Amino acid sequence: MLIQVRSSRPRAALLAATTCALLAVSATAASGTVVSGTVSGTAAAAVVPATGSRPDDAAQTWSVGIDSPGSDDAGVRASDEGLRLDPADADDPAGPAQDAGDTGDAADASPGSTADREASGQLVDEPVDLPSPVRTVTADVDAATPEGTSVLVDVRGRLAEEGPDTWTEWVPAGSPLPVASTTVQARVTLVGTDDVTPTVRDVTLTPEAARSRSLQEVETRAKSGGQSYRLFATREGLVGGTTANGHVITERDHFVALPSRRGLSSKGSGSYSVRVCAASTDRCAYAPVWDVGPWNTTDDHWSPSGTRQSWADLPQGKPQAQAAYQDGYNGGRDGFGRKVANPAGIDLGDGTFWDALGLRDNAWTTVTYLWTGSGPKGVVRTSGGPLTVRSGPSTSSAAVGQAGRHANVVIECTTTGTTVDGYYGTTNVWNRIGPGNWISDAYVNTGSSGPVAPTC
Image 1 (cartoon, rainbow, N blue to C red):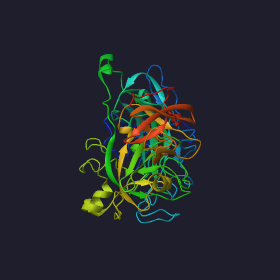
Image 2 (tube, rainbow, N blue to C red):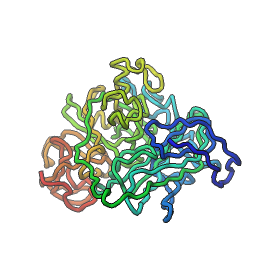
Image 3 (cartoon, rainbow, N blue to C red):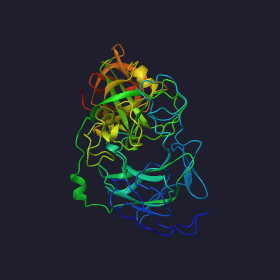
Image 4 (cartoon, rainbow, N blue to C red):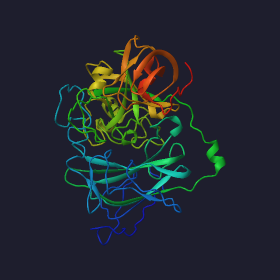
């Protein structure tokens, strides 16, 4: 990684001089990422959507709109000094990760939570359209990071041909996107404590030079149904708490938490959604990822060793907490040094746990990371509650699960069945979203008025 010091840009109440300190940067960040400014702690490259300006016509660079956090941002506020954590909103202590065996609606952070180790907030920039596809976007960050704090800048690319809310996974700025894209988005994450916050004064993004058309044309995304792994699932509970993306947890809520921000959806979005199936109940749930946990925050265990942010020596699909609990990995402790009390790799909102899956205790499940697959996708939309998933294309078919509002599901194929009057009108088209799992197209935003997948 290139580390560079530059003069701070003019800004109200900005420090007159800046000094450089050693930056500890994410191990997966590429050498093109630039971090600069007044720092004395940890800064790392990463990205989230926010309200930035359009890129300059000549240089194609643009700045993240850190002066005006929006409704999909969480735990941050603008000040004269720059973007800072908002103590009243940053990762409410009732936030991520309910501990196994705790079946009450606890108001305090559970042993599996990250809230007692860090406070975090994020600003998601508006998507930016570029004149040609890019594979890499670098970030020049002007920030003050006191000891124990960090700033992460991540980016992602839109996959418009696959659905209305389909994106690549978040990657650290400077790292290659999984697929070149003409629409990119940035996210700025601030990590600190209840007492200390980093301050971000400016983030400037620069895409790599456009590649030749011949290279753009030959690049394709391999067809895939998404990666699936066996994970121990725990119930998050914590009604009234705030998730990592700013969502306030409600009773019987439908969402999940994964121990990495790389698969974290923005508030009110299901860009990153999972299918969770429990063999003990023979039911499946489809839900957006709205929280970070359990146990860790940098454990994208679904990634291969070459791109996994932490613990790359572990087998792909095995969470660090599971390895610590079962194998004594890392001395049996998580990334914060806490003794791991259960092998949890995913947390489930109460509605996902009780209603969609029919669970009454923590259980081993099969989790499919839907954004890692390709093909047509659609966003589930209802007037409020979850959508019933049925065993066949009929309202008389058995209920075999639920799909939460905003879940972004893969549409494997379509057929005709019972005519349904739903959120998007009346239709007899049904979508198969998993083995033996069907939902009416009347409740799915596919970006099209007709079927988007082949006939079953």
